[in-house]
Length: 154
Image (cartoon, rainbow, N blue to C red):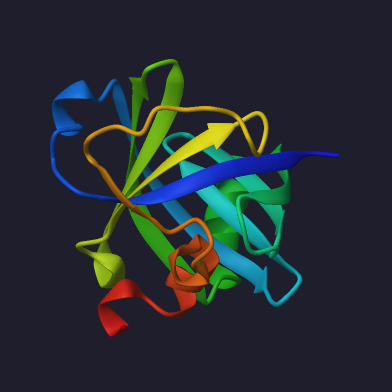
């Protein structure tokens, strides 16, 4: 069983930008998103994935991800996904942890969220000075929710 343990934070400053190691443009859409789970199609650069995630609120959720053909993913996004979003994911390291910073586009423009994946719920990590308010338990910041109720409509 795959478990994702992730803490999510709003961005307090741009001090993270010079430390970015790699950036990738992501397109994703939702085939299903309800009170129990979400099923997502994502194109990340030249790769594509099908992802199934539990809708549990908090820092720990079930997550399963499988590579799929890029052409299939594009067709699913174009024909089956009514709720979509686009973002640029920036990767950087801070004191032993890989941080993913998602800079959203389109109807979510202006929203930048940092995430750190952990191996245990109580794993110690250092909070960077550019990380602001924690929003791990706020479902408004879940990508599945942002695809349906974009940031700029709040």
